[in-house]
Length: 301
Length: 331
Image 1 (cartoon, rainbow over the protein chains, first blue to last red):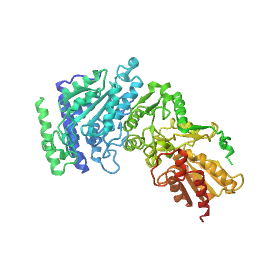
Image 2 (cartoon, helix red, strand yellow):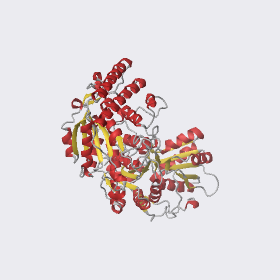
Image 3 (cartoon, each protein chain N blue to C red):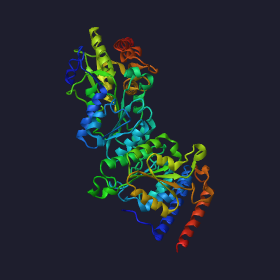
Image 4 (cartoon, rainbow over the protein chains, first blue to last red):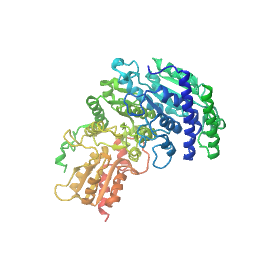
């Protein structure tokens, strides 16, 4: 298996990396003058864990056939995707400043025509899990799912398809169509990660369209459900290990995250869903993240 | 006369002309495509038999995915499979796919540029008794306005089979439009078919044609009957089969317009935005001439037999002849 338990040293490294990614997110949003803030900050830890620990991928060879696939369904949080990919070495960190500008590879919502190394274009909600389900089905057909019929065939046996989703996009019927199909087909090679941050554009999810009992709903569709804190690297890593070990079902990891995480002023406020920080707010945010970064380093020493 | 070079069905005007549903040709083509390429997969939204996917599903059960009545999922799952190297054909009724799931097709297939083949069966008014909810009359428009998307509307079952095989070999997204009812067989196995290429099915025995009739889909037989009857009245026409609506064969359309100076388009679809509009876009920019449009005139359909409906909505042989004469009278 490619997963290893996280050492204290590795956790510290990931915390610092996530902090750097959050700084990049603030900087790129300020430069862009539009875009989403809360979701990207809230998902920074999960993206960091995946790109720097979990995913089988090669930033120097993004087309590597045997790589894991990570489908981002809620494309509007792409600042965290772009920032994480840049920090992982897919493209220069400097390029993040081109977000949402004319001619950029970093379109306002991800578009493969401009950045072909993306697994999918996205933005309109509710379609990501279906695409990931299609990928997992294709691998299952080919015996490339873990412990599939060609398990002894080689490296491909370990491939997983991950899908990152928002909680708000569970309002979409298309999401449940995918949940139903993946459950029916027992896609053990499919792992969904839901950003359960409780906010959407118009307000709190439970006011807009209640999702609870959220875990029970997934379970009822034949999924294995793990609930976990979305900012705890150790717990998240364990959840992914568990998901990879489940044989009879696809797994959803419901990650309870804090929208705007890392910048106290932005946290838990749905107004930050769809707007970028202005110059003053960005200054406060960057200061806070720098202080936090310093704290992480000193705590671990 | 029928274009002798194309080896069309010599029996097409006789009483005992074979009639086969266009969708059946798709089913045969998909089976053959599946035999030729193991990456061809099929997905269906609870209409396996009526979209004729059952032949493939029975032969290759491991490559067939039953999606259930979930057209949004149908095309988005297909997009994911295409991302892993598969050539997915996904079928439903045209009213539901691309009717219901247009944005998913746009974002996850066309915008994503994945080689998914969307197969819309039961297109057009000739669905008949099921009524207006099930008669897709806007699907050509919906799909041809989408960048990256090819659109093909075969005239009979044999052409549908060839189109299916051809689409299985392209790396582009495509929409294949199929009709439900039995349709006279017009072409033969020997008739040439190339994606993006129009063919002249009917032409005058001598001299130039006065009117060009451009047809897509299952109204071809009626258009040829009209051309034959017009010939008896000394009206010389050429009838073009424009089964590939996108990419569109601009050169052939312009050449026909230059010869005839008058065009009538014929399709079982809304006039607004359909094949006729596509032809008009080509001609308005390159060789503006007089046109008439046979098709649905901004109406929804209703229950009835296919023949009743085609007559009622002005797409029958007499209507085509009338349009030809009308465009002839115009200077």
